[in-house]
Amino acid sequence: MTLVRPADAAAIEEAAARLASGGLVVFPTETVYGLGADAANRDAVAAVYRIKQRPIGHPLIVHALDDGPAMAWTEWSQRAQRLAEAFWPGPLTLILKRAADAPAWACGVESTIGLRAPAHPVARALLHAFARRGGIGIAAPSANRFGRVSPTRAEHVVEDLGDDAPLILDGGPCEEGVESTIVDLSRGRPVLLRPGGISVAQLAAVLGEEVLERDAHAPRASGTLDAHYAPATPVEVVDAEEVPARVAQLRSQGSSVALWSRSVPASIADVGLAMSHDARTTAHELYDTLRRLDRSGCDRIVIERVPRTPEWRAVGDRLRRAAAAS
Ligand code: TXA
Ligand code: MG
Image 1 (cartoon, rainbow, N blue to C red):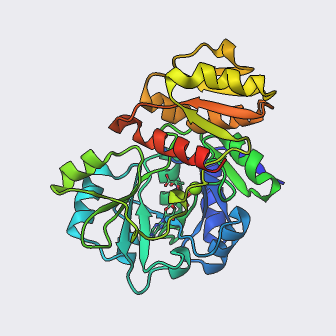
Image 2 (image 1 turned 45 degrees about the vertical axis):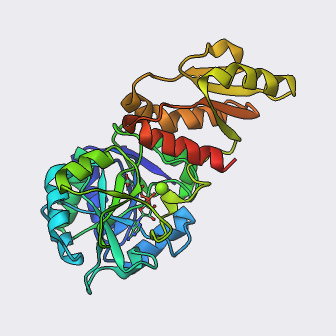
């Protein structure tokens, strides 16, 4: 039986105790909900892979306090120090070479470790309570089944994981709504692996050097696969001026259409939702909206293309992947 509990002090203590004894806990972060296990416990981490149905080679992000002992699991560097000082706690994951005593089983096939200090007060309280029980880091992927849309509300986790979800700490809707920015510091130059709330320009400004785009040598990262972040209903992303014609065409072919658009009246589709003109608001609403469009019962989902500007990058990236999976 799934247990959803408001994330009050007692629930957080219980969650920390569960983690410390090898159990799993779903907890809110400022980006999306995570399915967490004690990173140092090999069996607990194995259970995360099992429930998430995630291929074993795909590494997990280890969540930790920004001033805690998890840094000893990495080859901490000056670049890491600069970025951590500027952006932790917050939606930034650092990929670093891992130290000899790091929990290799959380790191897939990589010789690196992904580390993030989340800012959400519930995530931080959980990390503090876990630390009081000797815990160092919580390995946690997004709390969805592999390849599906990330959960930004406790009810999304229930929908997705059903009775496989262990204790769920309900902290309300996630503020950011898209997964953390991932930057790889394990190679010669910093490389962006996944765009998120913290932009390349922000990273470059703090580092005082260019942040490279992913290339063919980038390590495997499931969040960077196309065919990810996808609803079950086919999705297409269409330029604003082409939306009316495309919707009309699909409907004339007998398909019902669910539309998410900024500039086109909802009434042209069978189901229509209005997209915000603000990138942060759209990110916040993204996964809940994708789930609503998916549940609408329509045959097709059409989404208006978002601007190609830096502030829209993370949303544009997730929409492109949702469409690539269709
Ligand atoms: O915002 C987030 O990052 C959320 C919350 C829960 O913190 N977590 C998240 O986890 O999105 P997940 O597992 O869904 O995505 C983690 C991404 C994957 O693309 C994974 O491959 C990559 O991080 N990753 C983790 N460790 C890595 C490593 N050592 N090297 C390369 N990529 C890594
Ligand atoms: Mg994920």
